[in-house]
Amino acid sequence: MQFAKVLGVGLLFSIIGWMIPGNIMGSDSTDAFFMFCIPVIYFFSSIYFKANAEEKKPLGTMFTIFIIVILFWAIFKQNGTALTNYAEFYTDRESPPAITALTDKLYFSEKLKAENLEVNQIDEQFRKIKGPDGKVLKCMDYPAYFKNLDASKIPAQGESVSLVNTEIFQSVNPFFVVVLTPLIIAFFAFMRKRNKEPTTASKIAWGLLISALSTLVMVVAVGVSDNGMHKASAWWLIASYGVVTVGELLLSPMGLSMVSKLSPVRLTALMMGGWSLATSIGNKLSGVLAKNWDKFDNKAHYFWLNFALLMVATIIMFVLLKRLNRVFKEQ
Image (cartoon, rainbow, N blue to C red):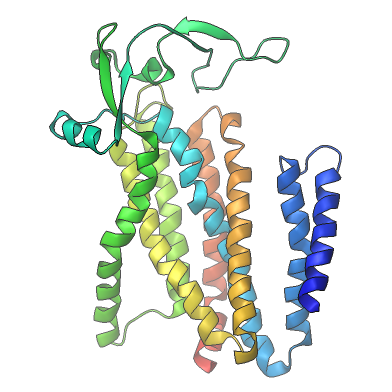
């Protein structure tokens, strides 16, 4: 009955969000999503306020961490938006000759011919140029990839260059998850033997900090490529994914561990839902942030914004760490 009530009110709120004149968060669907979340958040809040004194401490700790990690997911999930955009237009994706035959066979690469085609007019930051009527202007030019490629790497007219597919860069994070997970586990096992293993809350705090550092890798990438005037090495993007994966491995599994440790038994399943709610809100905010990509003339400022958001979450987490650790110890 309670579920039906929350679902019904959520659907009503989402319809209101969809019909709001204009957009608050960038699109009707996004407005509807966040409006739907309002009664769901209210429902979780009511669980806290109705809980007894013994349950309030662990519930409050979980809800605090849920709120904090929203910012982590908002930055982390940009691998499918802003970082993919960076891979497509700002990254040197030429397949090394030694592996081109293999990447071609695996359909990891594509041939791009240097020839004049009817393409969209774009500015120096690959933003489409529109005419007075709002339509995108067209022109005869090489494909956009060649716009900021070093002249020495541009093939002769009519010839092709083999490029690693943009989407392949989204596989870098899963690759690092597979490679780094055993190392992270071994590291904490080593720390545990010496009674120095960080607490669950501490791991989450360090995960936030390390994730923030991954955005600084991209700040440097933008700097060395002169804000996209020249293509950046693919290693910058790979390095950023590597760093943020370490942060993810410290934070994401710890969140589920936290829920199982702190939740009152009768509420464990609901609190797993609370963690998923925080994740979904963060994912949606990621899209909201990425929509502002074209508003930044200097792309370093975009990554500085991401760094600032993660550092806010990191500072809050470290400020609360002593109290959070005390609750974990009590439970």
